[in-house]
Image 1 (cartoon, rainbow, N blue to C red):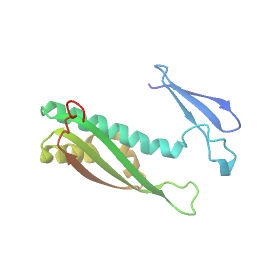
Image 2: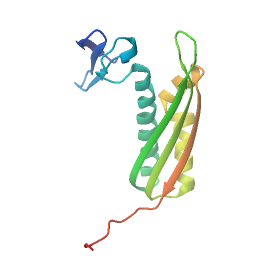
Image 3: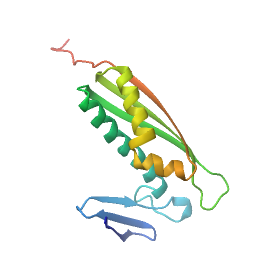
Length: 149
């Protein structure tokens, strides 16, 4: 069983959440709804979780295939359902950008496996009706220049 504890720490809507290992996250609502911009909006945290979950999957898969990742970033954009309460994520697009000594086909397969098989957050969002799309960008490693000008 997982245990998460929340405690109000800032204004009306600013909460700190702590997991069983002592890791903390701050959450708040928007200024428009009475928050103080103390932390991440809870719905945005879902997209952050999607990025983290898929990133871990992809790195694990590529490491098993002896691929060398020198840089990895993810950009996620999403739109919520307009005019609904609760307003769920209608869609989200994930752009994975990987650099290193990586076979592009293996990287694409790792992304596909994460998004369609392994990532629990992706599956949770899909079951709620969110349309998830993804794109992969790869680039070779860029070695820093030796010496100066």
